[in-house]
Length: 147
Image (cartoon, rainbow, N blue to C red; front, side, top):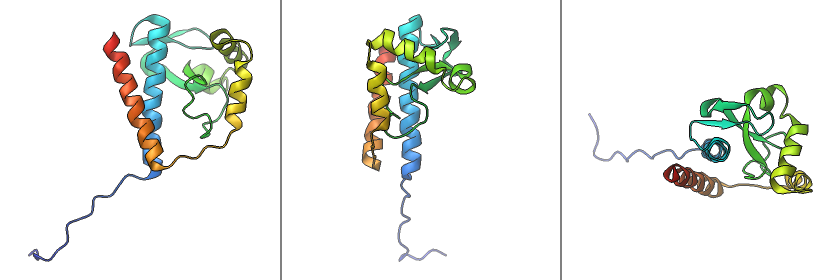
Protein backbone atom coordinates (compact mmCIF):
# COMPACT_ATOMS: atom_id res chain seq x y z
CA UNK A 1 0.00 0.00 0.00
CA UNK A 2 1.36 3.40 -1.01
CA UNK A 3 1.58 6.15 1.54
CA UNK A 4 0.31 9.61 0.67
CA UNK A 5 3.48 11.03 2.20
CA UNK A 6 5.78 9.47 -0.40
CA UNK A 7 7.83 11.94 -2.32
CA UNK A 8 7.64 12.02 -6.11
CA UNK A 9 10.55 10.30 -7.80
CA UNK A 10 13.19 12.62 -9.08
CA UNK A 11 13.84 12.32 -12.81
CA UNK A 12 17.49 11.52 -13.35
CA UNK A 13 19.22 13.98 -15.65
CA UNK A 14 21.52 12.60 -18.35
CA UNK A 15 25.21 12.59 -17.47
CA UNK A 16 27.75 14.88 -19.13
CA UNK A 17 29.10 11.83 -20.97
CA UNK A 18 25.62 11.03 -22.35
CA UNK A 19 25.05 14.63 -23.44
CA UNK A 20 28.48 14.69 -25.11
CA UNK A 21 27.64 11.49 -27.01
CA UNK A 22 24.33 13.01 -28.15
CA UNK A 23 26.09 16.22 -29.21
CA UNK A 24 28.63 14.17 -31.18
CA UNK A 25 25.85 12.18 -32.86
CA UNK A 26 24.08 15.40 -33.96
CA UNK A 27 27.39 16.89 -35.17
CA UNK A 28 28.26 13.71 -37.07
CA UNK A 29 24.84 13.75 -38.74
CA UNK A 30 25.44 17.36 -39.77
CA UNK A 31 28.92 16.69 -41.19
CA UNK A 32 27.82 13.68 -43.22
CA UNK A 33 24.64 15.41 -44.45
CA UNK A 34 26.58 18.55 -45.43
CA UNK A 35 29.21 16.54 -47.28
CA UNK A 36 26.71 14.25 -49.02
CA UNK A 37 24.90 17.29 -50.37
CA UNK A 38 28.19 18.95 -51.36
CA UNK A 39 29.66 15.93 -53.14
CA UNK A 40 26.65 14.17 -54.70
CA UNK A 41 23.74 16.55 -54.24
CA UNK A 42 21.79 13.85 -52.40
CA UNK A 43 21.11 12.94 -48.77
CA UNK A 44 21.72 9.24 -49.17
CA UNK A 45 25.22 9.11 -50.70
CA UNK A 46 28.46 11.05 -50.35
CA UNK A 47 32.12 10.94 -51.23
CA UNK A 48 35.01 10.37 -48.84
CA UNK A 49 37.12 13.53 -48.55
CA UNK A 50 40.35 11.56 -48.77
CA UNK A 51 39.86 8.81 -51.37
CA UNK A 52 36.81 10.17 -53.23
CA UNK A 53 34.95 6.87 -53.18
CA UNK A 54 31.17 7.30 -53.05
CA UNK A 55 29.46 5.52 -50.16
CA UNK A 56 25.95 5.36 -48.70
CA UNK A 57 25.34 7.87 -45.89
CA UNK A 58 25.31 5.12 -43.24
CA UNK A 59 28.75 3.90 -44.32
CA UNK A 60 30.34 7.33 -43.99
CA UNK A 61 31.95 8.55 -40.79
CA UNK A 62 32.75 12.02 -39.52
CA UNK A 63 36.55 11.89 -39.67
CA UNK A 64 38.87 14.40 -38.02
CA UNK A 65 41.75 16.00 -39.91
CA UNK A 66 43.81 15.87 -36.73
CA UNK A 67 43.54 12.41 -35.21
CA UNK A 68 41.78 11.90 -31.94
CA UNK A 69 38.50 13.21 -30.70
CA UNK A 70 39.80 15.81 -28.27
CA UNK A 71 37.61 18.66 -27.07
CA UNK A 72 39.70 21.17 -29.01
CA UNK A 73 38.73 19.78 -32.41
CA UNK A 74 35.76 17.55 -31.62
CA UNK A 75 33.18 19.92 -33.14
CA UNK A 76 35.37 21.64 -35.76
CA UNK A 77 33.25 22.08 -38.90
CA UNK A 78 36.30 22.70 -41.10
CA UNK A 79 38.36 20.02 -39.37
CA UNK A 80 35.84 17.20 -39.71
CA UNK A 81 34.53 15.76 -42.97
CA UNK A 82 32.81 12.68 -44.31
CA UNK A 83 35.22 9.78 -44.65
CA UNK A 84 34.85 6.15 -45.50
CA UNK A 85 35.71 3.65 -42.79
CA UNK A 86 38.77 2.47 -44.71
CA UNK A 87 40.35 5.93 -44.69
CA UNK A 88 39.18 7.00 -41.24
CA UNK A 89 39.93 3.82 -39.31
CA UNK A 90 42.18 1.50 -41.27
CA UNK A 91 44.34 4.24 -42.81
CA UNK A 92 44.30 6.30 -39.59
CA UNK A 93 42.61 9.24 -41.30
CA UNK A 94 44.62 9.00 -44.54
CA UNK A 95 46.46 12.10 -43.34
CA UNK A 96 48.38 13.10 -46.48
CA UNK A 97 45.29 12.98 -48.69
CA UNK A 98 43.25 14.75 -45.99
CA UNK A 99 45.85 17.53 -45.82
CA UNK A 100 45.69 17.97 -49.61
CA UNK A 101 41.88 18.11 -49.47
CA UNK A 102 41.92 20.70 -46.64
CA UNK A 103 44.27 22.94 -48.62
CA UNK A 104 42.14 22.55 -51.75
CA UNK A 105 38.93 23.37 -49.83
CA UNK A 106 40.10 26.20 -47.57
CA UNK A 107 43.38 27.45 -49.02
CA UNK A 108 47.11 27.20 -48.40
CA UNK A 109 47.96 27.22 -44.71
CA UNK A 110 44.55 26.17 -43.42
CA UNK A 111 45.96 22.77 -42.49
CA UNK A 112 48.30 24.58 -40.08
CA UNK A 113 45.38 26.53 -38.60
CA UNK A 114 43.60 23.24 -37.89
CA UNK A 115 46.75 21.81 -36.33
CA UNK A 116 46.98 24.80 -33.96
CA UNK A 117 43.27 24.45 -33.18
CA UNK A 118 43.81 20.80 -32.21
CA UNK A 119 46.34 21.87 -29.56
CA UNK A 120 44.01 24.34 -27.85
CA UNK A 121 42.44 23.44 -24.54
CA UNK A 122 38.65 23.50 -24.49
CA UNK A 123 36.32 22.44 -21.75
CA UNK A 124 32.60 21.91 -22.19
CA UNK A 125 29.99 21.87 -19.50
CA UNK A 126 26.57 20.24 -19.84
CA UNK A 127 24.98 23.50 -21.05
CA UNK A 128 27.64 23.91 -23.77
CA UNK A 129 27.12 20.35 -24.96
CA UNK A 130 23.34 20.68 -24.87
CA UNK A 131 23.56 23.86 -26.96
CA UNK A 132 25.91 22.15 -29.44
CA UNK A 133 23.52 19.21 -29.73
CA UNK A 134 20.50 21.46 -30.34
CA UNK A 135 22.43 23.64 -32.80
CA UNK A 136 23.45 20.68 -34.97
CA UNK A 137 20.04 19.07 -34.83
CA UNK A 138 18.68 22.35 -36.20
CA UNK A 139 21.39 22.59 -38.88
CA UNK A 140 20.66 19.04 -40.06
CA UNK A 141 16.96 19.90 -40.29
CA UNK A 142 17.75 23.00 -42.34
CA UNK A 143 19.94 21.02 -44.75
CA UNK A 144 17.29 18.35 -45.18
CA UNK A 145 14.65 21.04 -45.85
CA UNK A 146 16.75 22.43 -48.70
CA UNK A 147 16.55 19.19 -50.67
